[in-house]
Image (tube, rainbow over all chains, first blue to last red; front, side):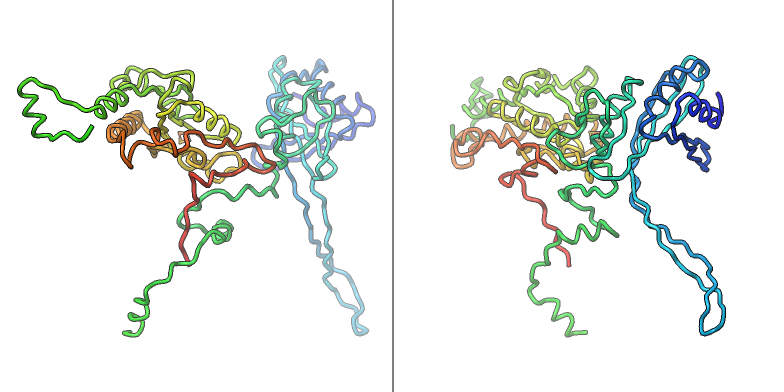
Length: 222
Length: 206
Ligand code: SF4
């Protein structure tokens, strides 16, 4: 299989204007991926499927990822004049990075027996109307999995033939796989809850019934 | 219909006279032909199928006739995870069963949500909407456990009274035989539990 750099160059040559980045994966799996901009994703996917050297004809998996808003703190040493003396002072800047939702596709080639190549698409933000373009017109097997991403993450896929909820009921309004989703508080807690669960469980505690005063007698005897 | 003296009965039996009561005859017939409703919801259903097959053979207890229609069933074995999307259908099936009807809640999932207890999509026990007669713990319970529950149910049926203040609920016209079907809400089922049959356990702690 061609390296990701070669595939990227090939796609950029064939699809003018496509913005493709390589997202490195420094983990043990070393599975880096291609980040493709939303407008050209369909054209790039078509190239991946149809190019005789690539022929990624099998979409094995589509999944969603939720990336929350982040604040990144940077500390820079700056020279400043304090009381007439020049000093090195640490200056901290905070940068707010907006969150986004991501769809990740794994493609293999049955013809050439190679793969996977992983591509990602990112929405502009995590708002309710976050959009991506659907790859179902290129890979039919993406249909249900894109519906699942819509159901659980709330990504709307433009060009999807039948975008409805697939696991939850139609009247449901939340997106349960988002990191800020809170499930209904309707279960009993384990006898020894701790941390966050303890905080939630405490709301269900009722005060102990009044004892008959026996504990006071023991206290006096001591 | 009153109770027969055991000593008198065995004495008569020795003389070749068999004495019984309407209640005994009625319960004997009912308890030996409990027809379960044929449906399974998750992995526990596989154990239920094994119980029905030749090795464990629920037919020995008169429960082999799994009916594909609720209108011919006496027993609902809730075998598996009840998702919130499935719960209204399970309650509706229960409502369509004719009286007298019984429910076995099979496995951790049907009792409390089991391994999926903290999940957003799983009902935390079918007893939130319908009354349950026998609970079987386990994940999944073995076929022997289901047979044991079945025999427990037979014991329960055997002890049901036909008359008097403690008569069986299906003979008491003031007791409901249908329960409200929950509807799909924006965040959860509406209502999340039927307060007439289910009260959340109180945790007493300081
Ligand atoms: S109790 Fe265990 S075996 Fe039974 S349905 Fe639940 S997960 Fe499956």
